[in-house]
Length: 206
Image (tube, rainbow, N blue to C red; front, side, top):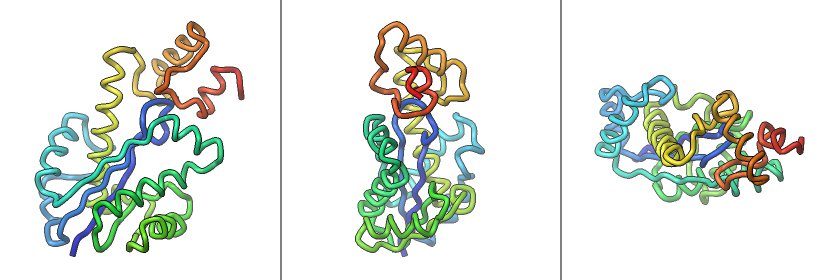
């Protein structure tokens, strides 16, 4: 019995990719993840996540990480289809890992609707969709760690060139960077999500 867990990272960020990660393993091996100390990535330090990342990919039978670039995010947000974009990518992960049951963390207010959409897009795979699945199911917690570490790596690469903070609108370093860049160049960097409200505000387009 193969079980799959899927989660995202970076959904609320003003910049960088939205990362979707999935893992699959035999149901009987779930306790191996628990004994590693795997839990929701938000409850772990950056250092712990990196250590667990390596251990998780050694334990699981398979894993897959997809990165959605800002231009794709912008195109979907403009059509009010961000949840649909995420469902598409989650379905891609589901199809790739091809487990008996996939547990997903729902970004839709209606988890059942979100699960049905992923099932439809992945040719009828069995999907169990829940809010806070990352803290309820260890298989989703493991996926959340992979997603978060991959997303952080993308931001770290950008940080080698720019002082852009965490990428989130609540981070004044990020807002400052985006504002300064736009004032100087009159365009946004390719890694900034131009459809985000705080970014539109900076561009004077809200």
